[in-house]
Image (cartoon, each protein chain N blue to C red):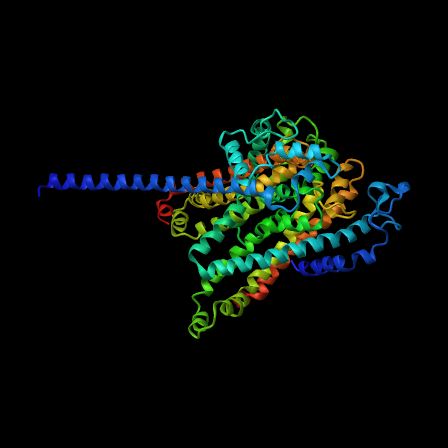
Length: 265
Length: 333
């Protein structure tokens, strides 16, 4: 259970510095060593056209990191703003926002993502982020709304309102700061979800047309699974461990940020 | 008042209350149906609007930027994109209401609904098999974990659950093929006859693993709650065999929340089916959807999304109504 945070830090480091540390270019062709097993020259072996697996993974970490961070960032800001607004105002605005969220949730996430990408000529990084954010905000909205419904009736919020604080001030200074811990916990899990979604879309061949992506590497590996299983094993393993680490970090943060839980244990 | 008259009065009151309960049930069901229809209308509208909201011209997406302007004009007309938005929307609603879902752009003579209906049974079979596998593994595992709380079994089940949730479909599928298709050679490989029953096992496991993890967790929680009830203690005190207490008194009462969660997971199940059909090279709505994506056959993409979202709404509607029938308290809220 304790491996969550270190693995996540490793992922962040790989996203930041990976392309600098990679021993080869992610598209450097070496036809003499196609699908080679791990060796001293290629620590994790090679894939199609003799491309170095470690280098693809390190460059892919940048892609996964950028997409996950942007997606979660957009979803977090949009979702919590809408949720806090809906919960605070209530009434028609609440109905409209939650109704729209219900509607978006009727679409299985990956299906909606694909449908959005289908309408773009050459899906790039920004389209991918847009597609993933299209339903990413819903969970943040629900969390922010639920918490705001409780906070709205809290004494310090009542007090602020009675003292004549404008609505915007109450929302930004009294409601949002108290939402932070719940949103941070969800953001960690959502990072894992976004990494997985990016990998899945790239695996299906719908990713941005860049050289290095974990999902695309896994797709390559799956195509030659019967003869050279190491590519798919390594690529899939990296995706699975990253996603798992994000989820575990979320659980860890929830315990760490919730004083009530800390006292109990 | 005579005793007979009082009895009759009581009978009337009883009948009246039964009638009002029946009325309540109908009203509840009718309300749910109306709401579901509104949601479906919203889904249709959203699917229609997608084409217009996403930045970029769908004509570019379909033809690329090398196409002649005559081709572009022709395609724009064929997709009705040259008409005003309201007219396009009316035509889209018309195609949805008459059940055709429009015509495929790549195979002009084919109705989208016919293309979907042709492959839908494959996807339905896969989803059903995945659900059965998930329930078949999750129920015993959850019961065991709850019955021996804190034991090695419990910890093993919860670690397995964590792993089952984290392991991506796109990795699990190839791993299963490697283990059972290549090394052990006991199950068919991708691309073999997809109608064989054995060919369903690995894809269903791939789709069902995450669901198994969720359901096992839910079963454990629901069982722990039920096993803490007085009537379970009473049954144990009366000397009933442990197995009987667990299944008859525990599971029977824990099953309803578990089934609710399994229906709520339908969305994940359908997403999983799309991915898994591609991994195992099986026909189905997912494969049709992905092919339509690569062909940029927008009417087919829209049709698939529409059908998948409508299935989700319909199943949740049925669940809501069944829940209301089973538990009168639900109707009041």
